[in-house]
Image (cartoon, rainbow, N blue to C red):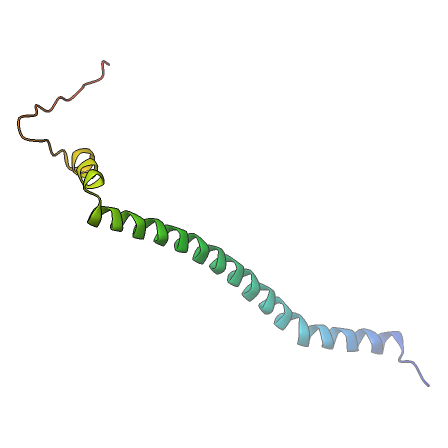
Length: 89
């Protein structure tokens, strides 16, 4: 059995590297992107669950509805006087 000369072995290695390295790098990039998207998907699933819970409370929980109306919309009950505190400078 005859072994290739060092120069031939180097050329063979270079050709193989030129063929396989770009594909390998593309696979690594795709795997990294896939991991990023999976993490983003998990975060969005958690956020979606929280929003569904909040929506359910807004539709069914009158105490929560009142809280949101008071805090975010500034609604007051009849015969209530709104008081706004101004911090000192």
